[in-house]
Length: 333
Ligand code: KG4
Ligand code: ZN
Image (cartoon, rainbow, N blue to C red; front, side, top):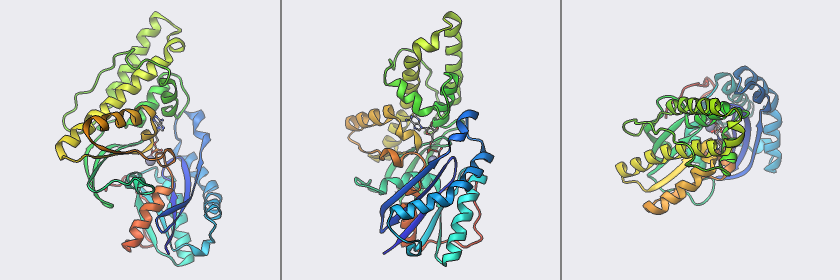
């Protein structure tokens, strides 16, 4: 039997999870409400709240899994990418726990873990598959050849898709994090009410910074005509913005499938919680004969279950790290 403790602390969620023989037994997530009043994640505050949360979160994960801490066989933690101070809390905790208990330590790449969340539950994709990984910090199209053999086919040249949602929300005077709110308002709006440009970026790369500017100018122009514009048309603006972001993402994903001939298609990361993206990907998949894989909502945004499942795969390979390991703000596959 292999019992893995997974720890995630790369941004503003402190999370701990227990995985037993590849099965997730608990996934505790402590979100940090403090950032909302600043309109974005404040790195120094994130580190301090991680420090307060880490021990109670791990305790709760152990309790919910109905195990004792002495039953844990290895600790997997997010080494990067993320906020350095935030990563340092999870990394230091994991190292201390492993040292005290004399058990192996396993480093995990956060972006790989988002993709490996697809191996928590059925149906699981077959290799090779394509994964569109869309979060607050990244937008990537990844060719996944094996659990830890991943090839980056395309990435954003500026803002991430999650940032595009959050920055739009800010323009629309919605609180942080705005992505889920834009999704909510979009449900009542007309997705074709406002025309927004599709950036012409060659290959499989993305760009979202022009879209943000286009939205700002559009809102400013409309507000000059009608100062109450945002109140009256919020749902239509959200629906139009969401429609544009989703088509940018899906057009590139379709190109990647054509180029590689791969028809196993997955999405991962916080933005994969977006209802428009989930629905339109499913429809596109039906038209194109793809097998589509969409993670359960709790495994889309940051969580430690994805770290624990990735840790379990590395545990089977005896892929361990030493105590001198340090977190990395930037980390490639
Ligand atoms: O993966 P994640 O939890 O954290 C990072 O690693 O960045 O992703 C967070 C991002 C935020 O930008 C948030 O606004 C966005 O995911 N997000 C959404 C939705 N839920 C989360 N964006 C659009 N629609 C949603 N339903
Ligand atoms: Zn993430």
